[in-house]
Every structure is written in structure tokens, then in C-alpha cells.
Picture 1 (cartoon, helix red, strand yellow):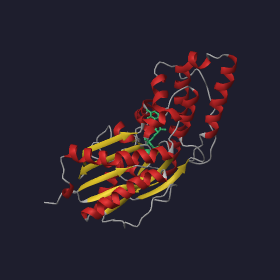
Picture 2: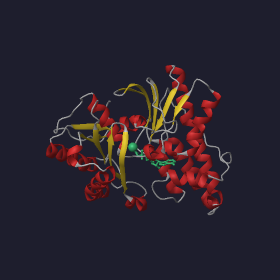
Picture 3: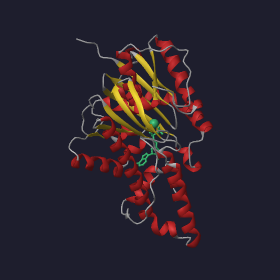
Picture 4: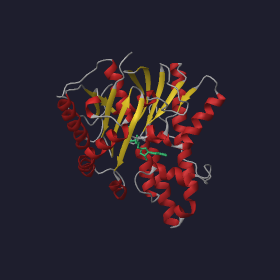
Length: 343
Ligand code: KG4
Ligand code: ZN
């Protein structure tokens, strides 16, 4: 019988210190220590983030072993996020993973964070249909750092078809949320307050961007200026219209994403689509994609469970596992990178 592989995954690219242990594709533990400190700053403060990773990583690893009921010497390989992300934060995870690999004499596996968001769908029961997407499929990565449409031909054969030319969708949502008076991260707050709102009350114009690329900076500025102008005339404008504003903002973002993915399906002839990244936790966006599959029978849509949509260690561990199976080991001399590199 084939030996089961046990992999530990370490994620520290932004504001979550996340550690997971998986046995084959099953998650044994998935620990996330979120850094609440950034709430009051309206965004992630890099220096504070790296200090907190340093403070929390050992605790996260201990908890991951405890919940997995696994001993150190049972681990076959250690995987960690090499980039993209905040360099100081990445260095904490990288240093830990390298020491761990050297101490135990086990292989080291580096992980691209964006690729890991997509490969999270290969965790057992990771999405709401509880099935793996078949190749080829389109990955829509929507997070605080990235907005990309990616053609996925195999685990490690990915091609970017479209990307944002400026802000990521999550970044735009977080900045809009700030003017509405919400703390960071603002995406979940916009979703929460949109619940009883009228999504048709405020109409914002969609950016016109070539091909399969995105742009959210213009839309963000239009919304910010609109709110500022209205608030000047009526200081209670936001308070009075909060739900309608949130619902209208959420709707236009969901429509932009859906339209681009629709275009990508026509262009590629690939009608399997897997959503990933923190923004894919949004119910309005999920529902819009789900309702499209009801109208267009060719479409097959994969929606991640929320715990695997936002940053987590299990997506790093599964990517590590898939690399481990192909013996794609890395040297301990690798260095983290902040900007997106090619896959
Ligand atoms: O994937 P993620 O956890 O971290 C990055 O890789 O960036 O994504 C974080 C982003 C933030 O911008 C946050 O506001 C957004 O995901 N987000 C949401 C929701 N949950 C998280 N946006 C809209 N609705 C949500 N429910
Ligand atoms: Zn992420």
C-alpha cells in the first residue's frame, strides 16, 4: 500500500499566521492566528505584521501538531509561502520552515501564494460541491493582494489571462469600507451591512478595461468622491444610506467579476471556473456565479468553503503535497519575494 504523505504548511505572507498539517489531501489541523492590531490602522502595517508573526508562529505550529495528533518525526516535508507578500512577514515563515526542514532532515517545498489559493480546491472537500475541478479550468483569484483570471492546465501549469492594472478588488473594497467608517478588513463589513440594502439605489459606472484585465482604482475613486460630495451636503448621508450603499457597491463589483470571467470562458472555450481568495467568501459574488450556472448549462462552478477562501495554511500544505508527489523539492538557499513572479 502506498505510504500516506504528511505535510506541514506555513503561511505568513500578510496578516494571518497560519499552519496546517495534512495527510494526503485530508486536513488534520488548520490553525489561523489573525492579527487584529491592523483594524485600527485601516490596513496591514508591515512592521507590526512581521513582529506578530514572529511572536505567534511557534504557538501556531504547536497547536497544529496538537490538533493533528501527529508527532514531529511523522512529518515528510515542510512547505511554506515564499511569495508574493510582505517581505518581513514572509521571512518569518521562511526562517521557521528552513530550520524545521534542517532540524528534521526533511525536504523543503516553496509555495507561490496565488497558486496555493487555486490549488486549495484539491484539498478533500474544499469546495461546496465537494469535488475536484477537472483540468483545464479557469481560476479566478480575488483577494486583498490579487485579482487574476488564470488558465489552469495542470497543478503547476498555469497561465495568467488577465490581471488588475492597479488595485486588487479586495484593496478597493477595503479602501471604500474605510470611508464608510468600517475597520480593516472592510470586505466582510460591506457584506454584513448590505444585507437589507437596495442594490439598485446607487448606480456606479463600470470601468472599461481591455481584454481580460481589471481596474478597480477608478471605480474606487468615483465611489469615494460620490460619498464625499453627498456627505458635504448631508453629514448623515452615509448613516442614512449605509445598507443601500453597501449593496450597490457589492453588486457592481460582483458584476464586473462575472462579466470578465464570462468573457474568459468564451475566449478559451473553458467553462469550468474555480473561485478563490478572500473576496470569494462574499455571498453576493458566490450567488451571482451560482445563478449563472443555472442559466448556462455549460458552466461548472467551484466555490471554496469560506475557511479555504481566505488565507490559510491548508492551501500551502496541499500545494506542498502536490509538489512533494512530483519531487519538486527546493534548496534552503531560496529567498522570499514580495512581487508576483511568473508561476
Ligand atoms: O485572500 P485573503 O485572505 O488575503 C490576501 O491574499 O490578500 O483576502 C483578503 C481580502 C480582504 O481585502 C478582505 O476585505 C476580503 O478579502 N474579504 C472579503 C470578504 N472576506 C474577506 N471581501 C468581501 N466579502 C467578504 N465576505
Ligand atoms: Zn491570499
